[in-house]
Image: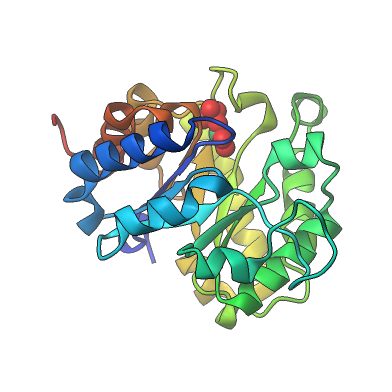
Amino acid sequence: MNRAARRLIITGNWKMHTDLVEGATLVAEVIERTESLALSADLVLCPPYTHLTVAATQLSGRSISLGAQNMHDAPEGAYTGEVSARMLLTSGCRYVILGHSERRSYFGETNESVNGKVKSSISAGLTPILCVGETLEEREAGQTEQVVGEQVREGLSGTDPKTAHGLVLAYEPVWAIGTGRMATPDQADQVHGHLRQVIAEMFGDDFADGIRIQYGGSVKPENAGALMARPHIDGALVGGASLDASSFEAIVRAGLGINGG
Ligand code: PEP
């Protein structure tokens, strides 16, 4: 299967930005600008937890999907401040971002804890977007493929790809997130190709051919087209630029190779 046969998937990760009113306004603007484009690409918005039910109402019956930025791996229990997969699902989420580098570096998430979340997201019926990526030190030490390979192998250990609801990977070099410094399309595509190979070793060539791998790290309208034109780059996980509906629209258009607005 080549790149053209895999449907593009572009996700906006809002992180801890926008209050409820600003969030609802942004969802409305994104709908207005991108709903027709969502016929040609999967578009996913991941606002903060507090915005999910309002956003779900706004997106109801539309072709843009809702996702969350994290979850706990337990189905329920005494975990003050945490949110389960079922809570996300019943709040209207279809996707959940797991193992984002900010979760790994600020909140101590490990490949093992991410694996627990991946498994429970799948069993609840959510589609995980599993994030992997190397630090600058790891890249400079020539360890990129080893690090991201381990993150994928351990993150997906014990999962059955057939039940994974279209599992998505996101390659996000840590040094490119929120820094304005992005991997070149060649650098990113090389890592994506390696990830596809790791998936082939784990789950077979057919599954590896079909899995979608997003690139994330300072994606903007100006660089999005060149990235998503590469053979192994099937979309983008967009942080900062997803907070502006016109930038998000421009990124989607660039990914689809459509000019103008
Ligand atoms: C992200 O949130 O995953 C991200 C890549 O952020 P940014 O686009 O701001 O670098």
